[in-house]
Length: 369
Ligand code: F6P
Image 1: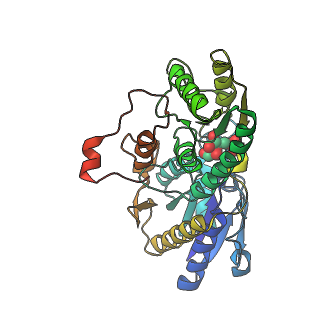
Image 2 (image 1 turned 90 degrees about the horizontal axis):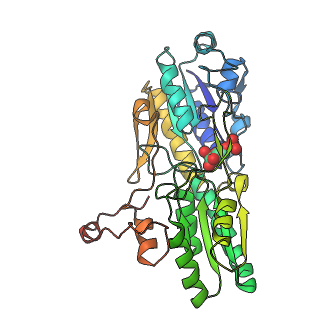
Image 3 (image 1 turned 180 degrees about the vertical axis):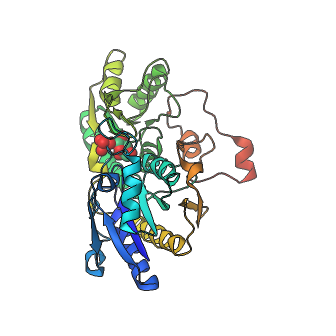
């Protein structure tokens, strides 16, 4: 067997563990030759590949980033204004690959699905700190990012206490608020604002006044994709050419600060956590998920079970057709257990319509996302 591996889209912690899992098990179990495609789909477009040895993938699982590079601006369907998908499919045939294990987010899974229509065999491995890929409960990178954000909240709390300030922490999370929600709950935030539930400013003001009466400071966590109920999402950059998702978000933290400064007298400071959330070593949990999904992807390739993405569902590994994942996002549902816990503890989510789903609670069927 000759198997390609690529990592596409934004990087995240755990990619090297997944590469190691896939490559080592393919070499060990199936005596396969492993071809690294450099910088994701860009390597397929620019014909940049190299053979990986066991030495190349041994002892990389603790490293952040990806040893084979990535790129989130390389769609074969729109590369510098050209459709080069035919040339990419031709290169794939020239390489003599049985298939490619593609590790990526929603954008990469969509590209895999579209490229598989041109005769290329893909097995997808979901990765993103955002944890928002459809059909899977968990993506590696998420746990590490949540740990970084939760630690940031701990650090903001002590200085917030000293100065009696309102502290806003802006996390990543473009279309889904998983990082903000999990970090916010595990860091004990007072207000958590996420894209799924546009916020009402007066709810946030009310929460600040309540906190002022009790503890003299407030911690607010806001996901970059959050927006006021009567306003727009905060976009930092429009029209990034060649990117499957051409916008980059940012700015909601500072925008919220301005909104609040017009309503309350307290001092407010904003911290934008940014790419710190994506860098550095993966947590042990992310290393484990990444290793398992990498090895599982290798088994799918060996079984010639292509056109699938590996999924984690109710603690089981399985796979779904790429078609089910393409053009889809998994947001935080109203009956998510962590969301319900936040509501139950009186954390402000900015949306007065959000209520604890009592029937679901009694049925004991709440999901921990
Ligand atoms: O999708 C992962 C992610 O980290 C998002 O949370 C964020 O909006 C985006 O990537 C940032 O992309 P870039 O690395 O291009 O700035």
